[in-house]
Length: 500
Image 1 (cartoon, helix red, strand yellow):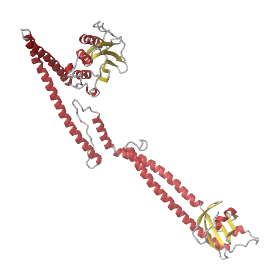
Image 2 (tube, one colour):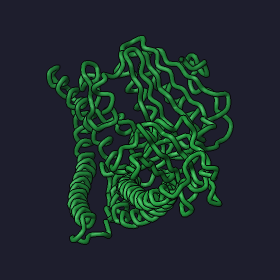
Image 3 (cartoon, one colour):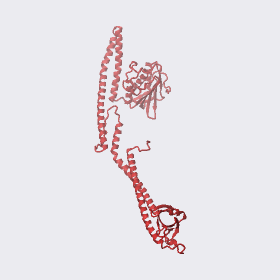
Image 4 (cartoon, helix red, strand yellow):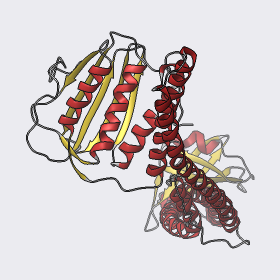
């Protein structure tokens, strides 16, 4: 069924249903009343018709015969008949006389075209209705003492006018009643559905909350909890569900806080022993060692450095999760991009590094070291997970429409697997093949990017198809001085046109 066929809201459907039922009931009552009124008027007309027939029969014998010289039209029906009363005499099945009375006691002949209808009136039977040239008539026939048949008729116009007037009144009353019922029904239904609307508002407020992370307080509750009503039962059930959900969220938040605290404490405590391991390994390597021992110490130092990096990343994420305030100062993103691309070129000379920078400096307000880490992680991600020869383009531009700064990192590598794409910013998210521990990935780089950008009130998104991947970082715009010169002349393509 199409949306136009049925009103959408419950209130509209209830009002429409009540109006439909009321209309049906009023139509049935009006139809029955009209039929009863018509039958009553017909019965009253038949009673008048019998009285007129008696007067017609009584005066028929006193009327002068045709050709006597008297005005037979004035005495044929008698002086006491109502205007428009029809009288006819049938002899041998044919009408010989047919007159209609006028005001003032006179009469005028009936048209010959109506004779057939008068001749067809049954004798001594119930009156019948016939449509004549002078209008609809109620007719009755009875025998006269001289052997002829007398037909008497009265117009149905009066009865029909009464019925027509009744129908008009019923239509007017029906319209007014439906209008009043619609307005009153809408007001009453709206009032009765207010508790249900409060339930819906509470549900909408809860649905708008972010329940997946962070501390959540479910203070919304339904005020209508009367167990004697259906809405009250539903409100009580919703409140109970919110209590259960609130308890589960509190338990989840406590568990997350304990886990974050554990990670932060563990990361902090691990920094000292790891530094000691690296120091002792370096000190031992200065001694004369066998080749096997030398190799073992190199591996120990390498793994200790890798574990130190992992611990530092975990500690940073724990601090960001705890809401530690970041430094708030103007940051020249143009200088940041130039330095980061220069460093990336030195680390990954097999890749083709490009920049697309505007002529004017682009800046934001935030923590310069953390934003440097964002760009460093994005470039390291592009370098680590793409083969040599891949082109990596760093773009920077202000968005005057939104008042933001847009930083993009685009590469022409193999792309991110579709199954991994929704989870790239999660912690320890790794793809297949090149995106593995063998390539040096800890699975925390992009998680740190997301956490730092979010802490700066920005957003980060990724788009990827085979042969093309783009990370888009949006940050609030800021203002700094003129742009600095390029940090490394070896970086080619500075301020080149951004690749499509």
